[in-house]
Length: 475
Ligand code: SF4
Ligand code: SF4
Image (cartoon, rainbow, N blue to C red; front, side):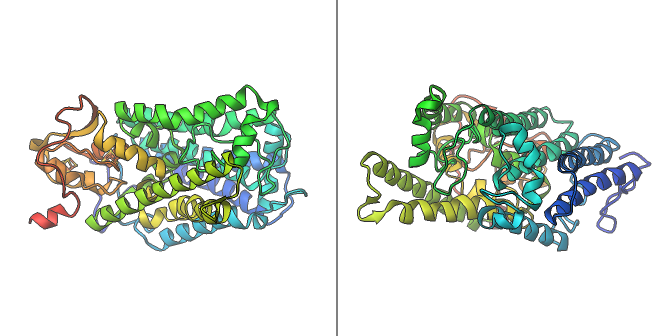
């Protein structure tokens, strides 16, 4: 810090006071949010103008604020005050944010009518505000999912730019974040929406919603995209009117799971997907960045993680096997069990909605940003097995340089006790590591390096069987 910088201490956790430019940025973003709430309350506003103002205000306001916040400080790790701020230390603001996010997910999944979604009629409130943009892309009024996809993309864009300012000293973080933003903006949002507009059709899913199978996140592969093999989806991709693109989607979807995923994971570890491409990871790495230290580092959490993530993985495999059996044998039952009621419905409710959405994002301020990726995602579970046993990826540690500060463990969003390995100079080969590289970015001694290399000697001997809780165990 320069002499002009006020010093950071427990007594003074916010040494950098918010200046006029930052306040202007916050005000702009706040006005954008206020516009969304006014629209939700059915205050009569010109829709197109209000939507442009709301989304533009959020993006430009956040950018202005974060540009000023980080660029007036020297380059380097910027987690000042994160343990003291109410929002990021499970204080009142953290709880408020958690409750608001959770409530929003509950409305999106189960009560979209309270957001103003009126299938078959004229939308109102929040959803109606997004009608002009939806009509622009595909000539149809918005659904709650269009609203959600737009806000999701705006969040990754606005908070991704904030992340870029914060980690501007780190080339890996800059490249990774630019790719994550581009993947969400183009592959998950713009391209599917534009294709949906070009290929408008009347196919609907069992809930009566416009199907538009192009209107799906292109990179969202099975088993993360758990309904890929559902009857209505398989039928849609084979419809005559959609050929040859429909079959192409089907073939690419299957190849993603069987070929591309294992091959890429072998060469690069699961980071190629979890931290560079995936939408869940994209939100966690941008919007979730201020909460990454909240992940539990306890050994018990690691044990729970292994049970849960592999349990969900088995669940999705069994559910999909039952679904395919029903599809090819043209029956709604397997071993006397109704496939929809006993497999698809519980998976969709428990895992697809509650775990990945409501808990996965709603609990960011309580449990950290990767609850879903760490404990639930079957795609992460599948890639984790490959990463652990057959991959070139590892984090190497230069143990002699480690000063045991614990920054790496603190900011590992996957709850890995990185310091335990660093102190011993052992390679880190863990199924759950998403290769975000933050442990390396926050290390003051350059101890940690994310590498892809030969398989031999990747695992240290003796095998690592204790990771978390180890410091207290060995003292
Ligand atoms: S060990 Fe490092 S790279 Fe892996 S998830 Fe944790 S912080 Fe990210
Ligand atoms: S951040 Fe670096 S120096 Fe600190 S404990 Fe981790 S590896 Fe060691």
